[in-house]
Image (cartoon, rainbow, N blue to C red):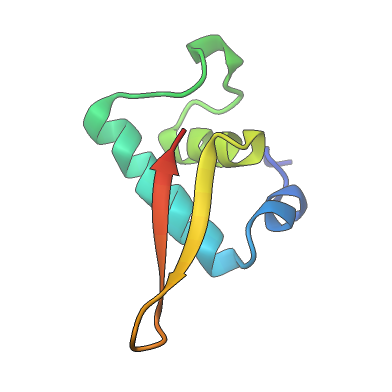
Length: 80
């Protein structure tokens, strides 16, 4: 069983595409900056992608939607 559950994450994020996009960006941020929002021992997963999903579930990653003139949706990812 994977942690966190996809069902729980989809209650937070509106689509699987958004979930993949947000978690991959956050995972890359972790690798580049070595910045984690939880203590090392609080994570269940060892890899950054799993840790990014845990942060999304914990509400530590804020996801907002913004529309542009072209009606494309862009997501702004901000770390609290």
